[in-house]
Length: 131
Image 1 (tube, rainbow, N blue to C red):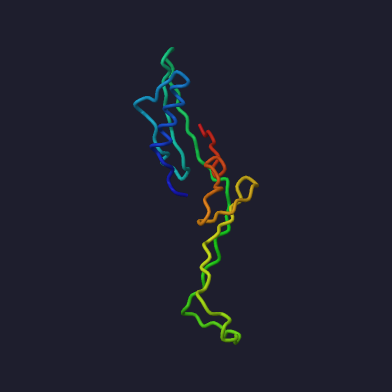
Image 2: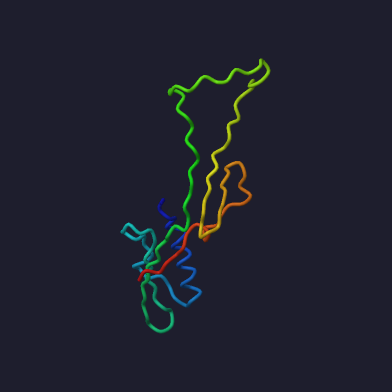
């Protein structure tokens, strides 16, 4: 899995802290230095003096079936069935890769030609507090 966007995640942590009358401390918001993907955030309340830290781990919720590989043109292929002169002419259809995702039991078909229905981050990942 690619590294999550630290700037965006930490900005969200700061906004969440502010809504709860707290600020992110100078220990800040940092990416976890483990095989888990996520962040560690330390906050301090703005009222009574209290400090707390938490780790949020991002867990993928999806599995996918990658597109079928395109055959290698250097490998021998069987001779095609003969066609009439006007059959089989024109350019072959280049179909875009389609990826079938299953996220939390819901099936998504990702087609690069159509971005009208794409899963959200909440469909793709679950956030688990680990600490």
